[in-house]
Length: 167
Image 1 (cartoon, rainbow, N blue to C red):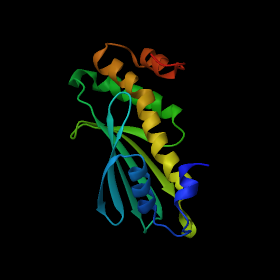
Image 2 (spheres, one colour):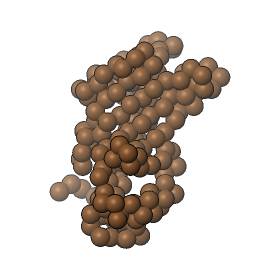
Image 3 (cartoon, rainbow, N blue to C red):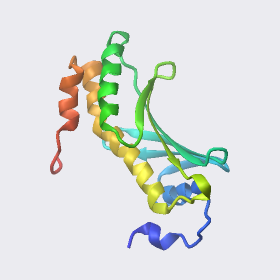
Image 4 (cartoon, rainbow, N blue to C red):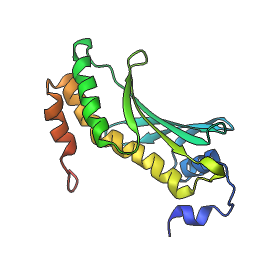
């Protein structure tokens, strides 16, 4: 059985409490910013990702923002936005955007729990792992476009290739 099946017995645990338990279980650095918000650092293969999850009672949504620093040359922004469009066409859950003022690449997703639904531990785990997996998958494409003089189409071929095994 999964960790999440053993660790939670309450049917009414707050979504941010679930996030905190998951961060503790995985030994991720985290900070409970407020009752309805948590920030954590999750180590990936390419880099460490900053993840913030926030619960909104107003629209009953658990919002995830996963960021990493990126400072592409100004003359590469057009190509970066082009590859962002290609990548977002491939992402069914969540989307990327670039925040130029903060020099951050951002992956965003909202888990809508309308009607008083509760987030399950598996949903929260999947939400975080999907964000990190998407960032890991497309990080090389962002890099190739920004610094490798590759076209968006060429960079997408690298991102779409399946990797088998480990180097």
